[in-house]
Image (cartoon, rainbow, N blue to C red; front, side, top):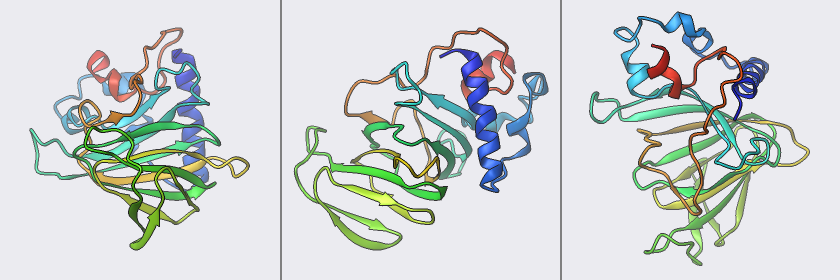
Length: 224
């Protein structure tokens, strides 16, 4: 992805979060120069991979298959006692996050506002394939039975709890607008706890056609 595209996506995301009346922490708006020399005081942000993150999952088409998010808080099992994480995500209409599950992380996915979020679901089998068994999930604490490969549509205010090993993909329902999605979970580790059903690229290769306006979490080592 080009840095110019990333800059525009982050700028658009800031506008959308404002429209949703959701405020990010002050350092979300820092310029690259604002980070210099601050590792000692911002170590938790850097080491726990907080901040801006996006991916096109190797598709080359972010708006068709991609995701932009901001990790607000996250623990680090090697360095601290925080056992939880929180993300703010923006999902466009028909923009797919591909099928995956987590070995360790249990999570709640929440529609915080905007359009509707469609989530497709499968149990994983013993070989980490797609099971043909029905699933039992909780929607806002209420049990619901879902057939294998079935979908749940979350309207604003609704949430689903996903246990470890449940395959899920999601996208914004066509015609309903962008979705502000929240995630509350156990500690998040994208480097080792994502099991995608198909091979995808998690972190994009960036073409530096212009300077970054705001840093991605993957930029910290280079700029701080």
